[in-house]
Image (cartoon, rainbow, N blue to C red; front, side, top):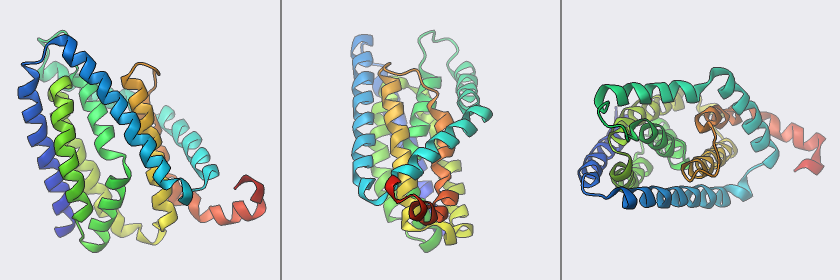
Length: 243
């Protein structure tokens, strides 16, 4: 139960931040709201790039490429983006159907990805599950409090519902950490974190309208390093010029 404390606190901060942001949303002119949303897209790209640069010395580019390609194929076959958007649209029709300009579905998908695929999520859940150490998740909770407040001020109630996704996703990852701990080396964690930040960059570009990308379909790529990294040393010893 101690290991799940960080996830509980993180979920609560997203709820609090989103609620405050939704109250602020009512007073924002549409022009300001639209420009603020684009500014958030730029910040999202910055988060992704800075995260990738932090991990660049610890990862194998080859494994990242393989994981992204194979993971995207898996995501496209399962069409995860469609399923998550369908859930977002269901929530939108249920709770915000009278608002023709609603961004609820977009807010749900965007916030769920941003809050759940970063390196802090992975590292924090692993430390919570393996050691009962929630310090990283507590730090992430403080950041998500501010992020959810800002995002909810432009995208509304969808950001609030992403708290459920945070609770389920981080809770499962924390519990699974105990079972898969023998496979979670520092190399695996670095690869997973880097791929997560690449997904965040894609999310930011999609928010700005630069790309029309089904970002959620890339998420399976994050978990492939668990199987690929044990093969990494062998691959690089056979093909050293690819390192």
